[in-house]
Image 1 (tube, rainbow, N blue to C red):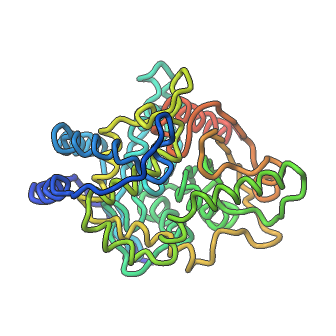
Image 2: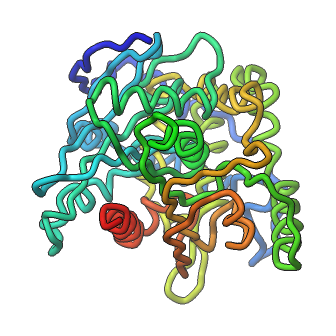
Amino acid sequence: MSVSAPVPFKIDIPQITLDVIATKVAAYEWHEMPEIAEGGNRWAYGTDMVYMRELCDYWLKSYDWRKAEEKLNRFPQFKVTVDEQEIHFIHVKGSGSNPEPVLMTHGWPGSVFEFFDVIEQLAHPEKFGGNAEDGVTLVLPSLPGYAFSGKPKTPIGPKGTAALWDKLMRDVLGYKTYIAQGGDWGSVVTSFIGYNHSTLKGGGAKAIHLNMFGLRPPAFPETEEEKAWAATAGLTFELEGAYLRLQMTKPQTLSYGMMDSPVGAAAWIVEKFHAWSDKRDAKGNEHIENAFSKDQLLTSVMIYLVTKTFNTATWFYRGMFEDGGNNMAPGTSIDIPVGIACYPKEFLIFPPRSLMDKGYNIIQWNEFDHGGHFAAMETKDVFANDVRTFVKAVKAQ
């Protein structure tokens, strides 16, 4: 095991990088899209070209990376090397006399930017009418190969990342125990932390909180409700899982197009923000900008572009494949306290509680009426309050 001391880090992208991206966006040659009947689903074949043209026009004329960069540099961030892997992370000390360390992990096609609207609420609740003693200390790392973390020589998956994160928390930052939280890949990483690196197994994680289904319990669906979930999940995967199969099996092939085309990469990423989010307004009308602003979408895309990490980010899928998948072994489970947050428009919904209980020691299960895959960005207060409630429940045990 080898770890280095954290070094302060600031994002400062060279102007030439931004100019090259803008030039390629401006030069993009638009092509055909199937005709869509009036009132039809313009995203049925993939990313709507009308919206992409609108987004790219905004990208060139109104979007300001330097303002986004200023926001991204708002919180203390560092780089450190753990077992030869360079890790970028944000570290925000919480209010109160004894703030609980909480490790939060993002997924694809996101980044630590997903959490920016809840950092202050979680770390300093007194600024929002809450109690300072409920503040938590946040550690938000960028996954290996993502954003400002280093690019691994070979794919690293969620199992390997869980081991890196436990060393980051304990050996680098000195937290003997901590709570882990995650969605998307973060949910799989966090589940592996609870599975392999809990305080019951010599690690530092004393509880985990998930807002997406992570490791699969060692059990088959038995009840009618469980079988219905399995059928629905299987159909969803058939309709929405092509990206995952490609990124898990042939990520390098995909990279040749995506690394060269900012518009192509944006369309690939924005389609997932559209498909996996809760786009409903108060009247039930759906539009992507009911969930995210153009600035949020473009900053999410630009983080991949300015760091040139679209390629290595997709390696994470291959990494899970090479790790052996995401199933718990027969007769095993996650025995530390677990919190589950179910959002209605999540791409991969949780199984019924009866099935989850066969692999997880669940002490908190909440179902919400709004929100999707990018819960922290979409629901903000709801997400922050749910995590805070779980932390308080763990501390009270």
